[in-house]
Length: 261
Length: 255
Image 1 (cartoon, rainbow over the protein chains, first blue to last red):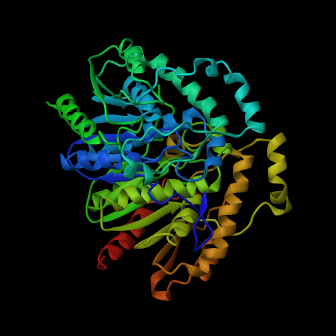
Image 2: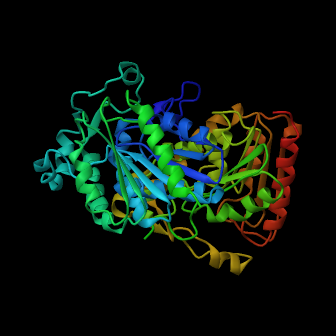
């Protein structure tokens, strides 16, 4: 946690706090990705709030503070955070649509299997890691983390330079937490056949972190109706990159459809 | 399947322009603030009962928590509530009271209700050895509590033990609170039971004495017929009324 200048207290990074927009009886729970922050979901939140929905953008445990906090995180913390957000939103709304980016998409799909939600929007969501050999190293990761605590993120794939320059995330991946990401991925795959509510999968053809073919693997295992949106002009962070307006419109239209009486 | 314990779910009530942020105590859950939240909501206020990081799931999750995680949970709650109303009153029980007082130094709060709140160091010299002790003795089982209202005791949702490592974090919160007390100048209501043996009422007296708030802006209410968890035990009605009166008074101040 960075220091709060005045009092020396730990604090959330500016722009990293949870956000809320009061609105109607349809609630949208927005979940950011691994090492990301609520900020990557706030434009989507503003778009949905303009449709008079109630919006809650969660901050996941150990995110938007300091990277070393992630060493202490377990995937169950993040699932519990989503449950927490669901209960808050459900207390003021009748129907909930869960929307998540990348790891947030994984968490949204798990929520779709375990919580009474009306629909799920999973954006840039992986089914398995692209470098699958890496997953086999999972048992070694906690120990390896002692000698190599962080490893760098790949080449950025942004199309909108202005949005990229203003992006809030940790600069590296803590290896200890990557192990949790693998475990969460396994949990998501276990949950997919129990997702009976409608799901919208959003991907970009240019996404180098999660290639669009991952969505096919997810779609084929879901039990309910699946819709797809494929955009072109965007990297992995489809909620902030150049094609974001198309993503917002598709998410809003989906939310309207699945919550129509 | 749910990871959050049944009954430990956070809660929210839509309402008027004054928001009440309800913060539970150490090893406890939003369950102990639910009744107070409902009472404040029935007075027309907006209310949000948060779940602190590491709480309401498994004791091992709390052993991994640091005090900054709890403060960040309060920050998130404040952000959410502030987006739904014009002013926020922070209400906390025990550790939640300490966090509420600390939070009032971080962002504008209309007032603080701190209940059964600790301030003074406890545990004698052992508190300096808690960290190494936590490696061999990770959990301290709670002693049986003697509630005045046995029904309320039965409904309680909390961990059965204290994670030793997290006790270190509690003492850090209190250390920081002792250092920041002199800079807290918002209206504060302190409520404590004379029968509280877990956190004796002299703690609230010490908080009262240390606050910078004007004399007219701080108040210490001592009650009877209750043990530590005064939001649930037999005298809860008296606690609800005192808190509601305080919140109403703060909500009449122009935001």
